[in-house]
Length: 328
Image (cartoon, rainbow, N blue to C red; front, top):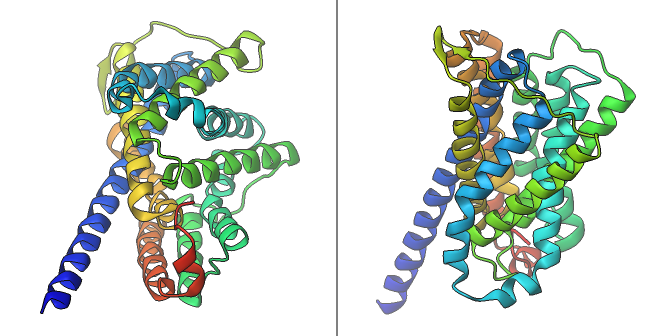
């Protein structure tokens, strides 16, 4: 009887952790997905992509830093011990991914650039296989294939797109940054509280982006012109505030919380919903109605996430899975 009660308690705790992880992952993907529609009108108003990203990440750093200090509770040794982790997270996962993506879209269309960047879940699967021996099963691979097909449909690439070698290289670099985000976010072995990792990464990311701006690699242009969303005119600082607080501060902190609960593999596939959210926010804020093929793609991504989770459940009892943490 005691054993049965313990097993039921364990299953209930695991179910609660999964539900919370999925909730955080959807919140993160939705928050990230809002950024494209918000930034597009600022770009049309005369802002440069570099200036938008710097303000966005800088505001997020200001918002999250107090919470990070509170979570640290004077344990400064955690920062010293994990200085490299925080530095890599800020430089690659925060600054690098965004800088490389915007560099990619200077050479190629947005859709193909996003498609290449969002091969990050596949990179995470390969990393876990090579690093920890977590070989993906047939169900996981089937789910990955469904998600990939759904991504192609959501981005509406079936009619073909122009590619360029520099654009592909930059997009692949952005993919490395995105994969780094998922792997480090899910790693609990370093002892860093999620808020501390988020705050440290955002601060480092702000410094790196600022340095790129100072040396001229990231053009900085800003205006005070009003912008229009869904027929409503708003002052310039409103979308910037939402970009910093919602699409960066909330997105990064909830993304780390999701990774800690789901592991880097499942969290990375749920994050593909960001592309679906981007299409929906473009509809709501820019009156860009999604095409039926894009809606079908969104359903395929959801189905792919479900199969990836089923595949993880089937491999949970394998020897490799028993000896390796899912997010490490």
